[in-house]
Length: 485
Image (tube, rainbow, N blue to C red; front, side, top):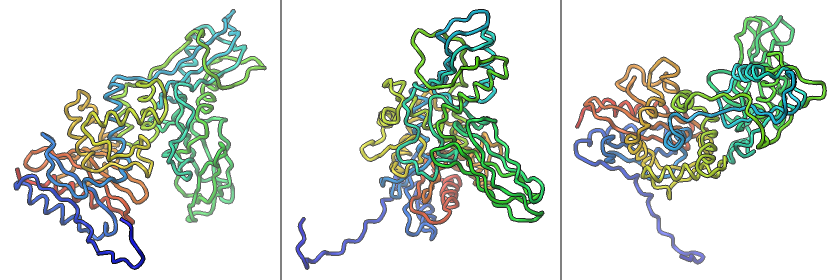
C-alpha cells in the first residue's frame, strides 16, 4: 500500500498474545500462569511460554508461544538430541598418533603426527598416556618434527555471531579438532589461571593449570594490606596468547581463578603432548621443530586414545551448559553426515533433525549449537513440540538424565538448576535446560504435576533488563503444584 503525504493512518491495537486452553480441566492452571506473567519485571520484555501434555503433545497453554525468540542455551536441547540421534549414545572421539618414518634402535627417523578427531575431553593425563604408548612402541628418540593435525574439522575457530568480548573466556573458547581441557569440567581450549596473594607490597602469585609454554602471563597484580580491596582482572589480549593479570589482592584474600580461552588451541594441545613425551623420556634431536600439517596417508598408527562415550559426555555438556561441547558436536554432525566438519554443514544436519521431530523449521533460525548467538530464533511452541517428540526415541533415557535437576545439590545432577526452586513442589522434580544471555533467559524441560501428570514446558524471556529467573521458577512451580486432571 502506498501512502501519500498527509494520508490518514488508522490506529490498530496490537493483538493480545495467543493463549490456548486445550480443555476445561486446565483453566485454573492457565489463569495462574497468566497472573504470573503480569509481573512488573517483564514489563517491556516479551515472554514466550508453552505447556503441553507429555503423553500426546496436546497444547495446554501458549503465551506468545508462536513468536520467534532467542533461546540462549536452550539451543543445546536441540544439539544434544541431534547428537544422540545421529552420532549415537556410544559415539567416541578418537585421538591418534602416526608416523611415516622408520624406527631404528629406538630412534624414529621421521615426523610424529598428533591427529585430533574432535575430542573435547583431552586432559594432560591423556597426553601422558599417549606419550607412554609412543615409548612402548619402541620410540625413544625423535629425529624429526612433531606435527599437529586438526584437519578433521575446518579451521573456522569461532561461530559467526560470537561477541568479541567473549573471546578470551571459556564461554567463547575456540573450536578445533585437536584441543585440550584443564580439568574434568572439560572446558576445551582453556587454561586455568589462578591468582593468590603474595607478601604485602609484592606481586600476586599467579599459577597456570595445566602448565604450558603456549601462553605468556604478564603479572601486573599487586598484593595489598590485610582487609584491602580485592579487584583482579584476568584477560587474554585479542589475537595473542598473552594473558594480562591486573589489580589488587589483599594478603588475606581468597584465590581468584579464571578459565581463559587460548588463541589457536591446536598449538596448545601440541605443546602439552610434547611436554608429555619429554617427561616420558622421549628425546628430540636438536633440529626437531613443531608444526601443523595433514597426516600423510601412508603413515602408520603408533598410539590412540578414545574418549568417554557420548552418553557420558552429555552430563558435563548439559548439566554445566558447556558451549565448547555444543559447537564440537555441531561440527561432528556435519562430518558424520556430509563429510565436512563445519558449522554450515552441522547446522544443516541440526535443522534436518528438527524437521524430523516435527518442528516447523520455516519459523526458526539456527546460527550455532550452543545458543551464544543472539541471532538464533525459535518459538517456545516449537521447543515444547520437540521435547514431546524425543520421548519416543531410543536415546531418551540418556537425554533426560543429562538435564539439570531443580534443587539437587550434586553439581553433576543439579547442574545449573541446583540452587533453584528449593523447598517447592518443583524441587527434585523439574528436569530442564537453563539459558542465559544479556537480556535473554530461558528454561525448558519436563515437570510432574501434583496429580502425577507429566507435562512439557518451554519458557523464553527476551529483552529483560532485570533478573527474571524467579518468574520462570514461579511458572514451573505453579505447574508442579497443579492438582487438576
